[in-house]
Length: 324
Image (cartoon, rainbow, N blue to C red):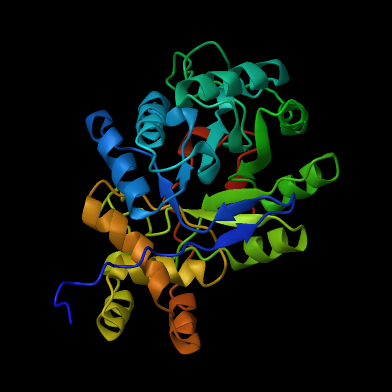
């Protein structure tokens, strides 16, 4: 009998079925705020580990790097384009209907692909165009623009019809904004990507979206460690109850935080720059939390939102003034 270590089976990543018939892998790889020089390696590590869902955005400023990394893996025959689920987002300065298609085409060029799997309206709050990504007035505040996101959406629908993108969705929309969009759309949004973690469990918004057959995708699923503004802001993966469960299951606190969401059938897009953590995040799919422990994590909800989108506090479409 051979004493060599058996080859580890690749982790199976379940898909979530979207309302348009397409499927999205429940575990994605987030690309926000990495260092440019690390990007090719990070994406390479993620694809090698088994990730196929890559979440990005024009605003992140790294779509050329993501495109190069993906192209490399395709050339190495590790993956085919059709194995991947590539996501990008339309930034608020490009919400005028005439800008939607050219902006998407720029993203396609940067990612070196001829279609996206999913394109999202990044925020419901339009900003002034042609002044950079964060257009500011003399007083330093962001300059808003009056663009109805329903009109933006109609331009997104046209991109689907042209075959530039397969599925379209929204991000950071509240229940009122979703209701308005649903009454004016001909193609339904497949997902609403919002901040979700045990400290902000978004139960009401998730239930509301489910009633409309919209999947909620969780960004910041680990509570966005490293983005806390000061010591008064809580860090989910340091929470005593999360650490207790980590010890009980022999899993990392991050794995507990991620499994809490994927067991609710919520796609997650954690970001990590280290190979070990990239692999560990994926391995969170290899165990289940008990019903009792899910309830303990439900009990951590305190409405803590890390990404408050302060830039747009005074925007008429600021999304976080409603309970959900």
